[in-house]
View: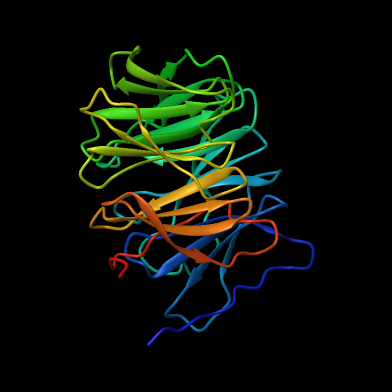
Length: 283
């Protein structure tokens, strides 16, 4: 049986980012006014309201163990909130505030072990912060355009970054230089997601194209077409057989094995900007 619920925020307070916690019991939402809310699927009480950002929330990511929440905004800051595994009884305050970027933060990704946090920005840089000390450890420079997406490999050894310069770069952490890069059209790489086994990389493009890159192959990435708007978000199923894409024109589900599109979901008029998959495989 499929059930649904409606999340309601204040008047004129649009939702700009969403993310499920790893244990699927909490939902974090970010808003146009900079506030965040933590909703529980179990607790029959209002969501916890988090305040700290002063401008629109652009990115949300839970730590792998589900106890910390990282958020980025147009105020150029990244905030780390200690939430825990259940709805907090009182509104948390930021445990760490990172302020290294000079323009809006666009994307956030935790390393698989939760020790590092990668952030991309319109300032064309990627910053990697070490959570133990709450400080910026590395700044990756190389993109000549705005950075739209950052994604760790499942092993945590590599970080993929995509930007408005039309490239996707794969970095070995600690090296500081990209190991290799995929070149494309200007403004192409809007979103990136590794497959669960780390063998494939999905890249969402500004022209609506989805590309699947086999990392250990010299072949040109497979291009899948169907969207007519920017592909802003991607989510793999846990078994790596299915990929969900969210774009300005709606949401689509792709069967990646034969590389063919097989379903279309209706979407809100402005399209989908963030996606989060459940732990169950899609059938």
